[in-house]
Length: 263
Length: 315
Image 1 (cartoon, each protein chain N blue to C red):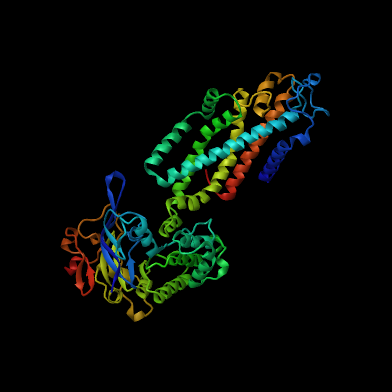
Image 2: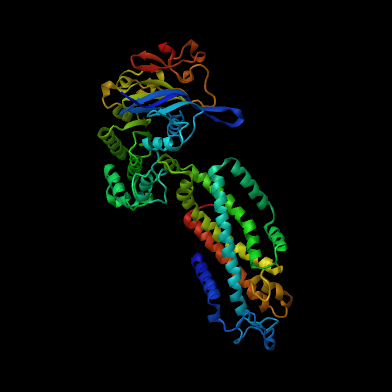
């Protein structure tokens, strides 16, 4: 039940971000100094910010960046993680030792700190956020998938495939990879919420998407000084982050139960 | 008759914790003639499955030679290896684990045909249907996934997959033990039919002695990684030579009351292969042990014509 609601909410969030121009008449970056710090009302359902920009528009357009960045960064992390995990788990030996040492190294950094470091080196922007998330994200996928491959490799059907003459590449791609996908999607679902948070945190720190481009994190960051006088400027953006993160986590949990994978 | 498989002084030691080595297969030699069924019996953990995996080159031996159809298995590569792969197939114990849960039957068997270039993509369906018919399944299973099939059906699929490359020898590693008794009979009949219809040889691993008696031409008994007795099947069941074999055979229920053997109960469990007893490895459990058994290691010697046994009683 909870998972169905979560999916419905996610669909609504994603669709409304995609079709934002049809839902709200306001331009998210257009400054309107006649209507600054307008509380929620009929004209502006979620109010306006200190430059008179419509909060609803900014949340909807911001969702494009926040959710979009999380999905793109998650997909790249998953692909890299799958590649490293499959090679490492299948071939073992020196390759495995080296790759896993590198994974441990990456995982031993506090992920946000590493992301901040990367954002400092590269010019702030969307691509930097994606690079920062991927730089940490691939490692946890790699570690998890490697463990799964180690288990799968012992299955008799892998021996059977070898006996009928399948090459290593074919065994990895046709036998092991398809059996890694359910686990990958489950973890992907769980991680997406975290990536949205990372993106928000980086934007909050001013290292992500640059103004006037709205993202949920930057909306909180820019408006936080008004939290007592005009709380709607911050609360709705924060609510969007919480809602989306929670929904992705519920979705991930539901997928995990469905496919009976642990971890 | 021509030998299809010859195993010479085969050894497989696994390294265990603390520098010990686990002698899973220790100096095993035997050969299988073309068209014969060679039976291999022994308790769990005696090295039967390791031996099967060695023959199939799923693992590399520590020492010794395996020659299949004139080709050395352990150091084969390239074209020779694919030739060995085509000639030498295996049926595993657990038909649930030996089929990829994400592959339909047509893809599981078709893969063997495609990898070995035995069929064009367009012909795969017909050829797989043909193979399924051979193992007594109809075309409706073609597009099913393994979880939609019963254990017996899955084992038939595994047999069809093994047959798809026209092998000369099939290693059957306890192909019956995961199946219901009624299904066991069907599968053994299927294997017998296949054996009779072609010149297919088998290495048949089992701890079901009735099936061994019924199906095999030669039998070898393994204990702690070594062959302790090897003999033509008929003589083996008429007169077991090794005390271990005697004990195994005494455990087989016999339908006739007056032919009932006296049951020999072995003391203790199989020792750990990490700590193989001194002298004859069987001596701590042997009901016939005598003075030098714990000191002298017996070797395989011909005790009767065509029959070898490693026991000091026969030296």
